[in-house]
Image 1 (cartoon, rainbow, N blue to C red):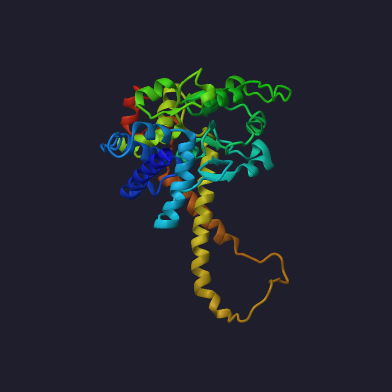
Image 2: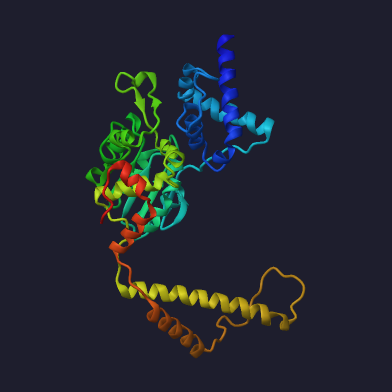
Length: 374
C-alpha cells in the first residue's frame, strides 16, 4: 500500500508538470517529452520538486524503463481520456530521407541501391526514429538519412548498403546497445558471419560519445541491471532535446550532427556534377513551371467555350498525335534557357558546406569545443 501511495504522489506531480508546461510538450515526440518533463522534475529548468512533492527515490524510478513505460502508457492515456490533452506524436517505423523526401524502407528494398539519389555523398544511420526526422534537412545536402524501428533487422540495411561504397555514419545512443549497433553495421556478427554483408571501414562512429555527453551535460538513464557490472548509466540521443530549453538551441539534433560531421572532416554537400547537367536540369524545371502556369491559366479561360456537360468514364481521341505548333514551344525553351543563363550563379561544394554550417548555431560548437572555421 505504501508503494502505491508513493507512485500516486509521483504521478500527480508529473500530471501537474504536463498541465503547467503543455505548450512545451505538445509538439514533441513522446520520448522527447519524457526528457523535458524529467528536466522540470529534476530541477534543471529552475523548478524544485524533489524533496518537496516527491522523493529522490520516486524520481530515480521514473528514470527506469518501467518508469518511462508508465509515463507513456498510463499517464498520457489518463491525460487524453480524462483531461482532453493530445498525447505527443508517434513516429512511423523504417523510413529514410533522400534528397529532402521521405520514403518507406520497403520502397528502397524493392528497388535496391539505385533507389538512392546518385548525388548522395553518403549515409547516416540513426538508431532512433525521432532524432532522424529532426536531421532530415541534411539529406538535401547529399547525406541520406536511414532509421528503423525497434526490432527491425539491421542485416537488411547492411545488405542494401553492401551494394554501394559510400561512407556510412552511425549516430547512436551512448550505451552498450548503441556501440553494438555501430559494430554490427561494420563488422561480422555471430548471426550474419555467413552472409558477407559487413561494411567494414566505411562505417564511421559519429556519436554520441561519453566525452560529448559530459561536455553537454546530458541526462542519463540507468543501464538494465544485467549490464550494470559493465557500466552504470546510458545516454539516449533524445537527451539532446534538453538543450532546447537549457541552452536555447532550436534543433539540438541537427546542430549536433553538423558539428560532429564538420569535426570529422566530412563535406556536407551533395556531389558535384557537370555544369552542363546542372544547367539543363534547371532549364527543365523552369519549363515545367512555365508550362504548368500557362496550362492552368489557359484551361481556366478557354475550356468553357466547349460547353462540356454530363459525365463519362474516359475520353478517347481519334488521333494519338495532337498537333502542336512547335515554333511556339521552341521559343519557350529558348526563353527559359536565356533567362537561366542570364541570372545563374554557380554554387560549389565548399559553398554548400558553408550553408550547412550556417544551419547550426555557435552554441553547439562551443559546448563541444569544435572549431567551426572551414
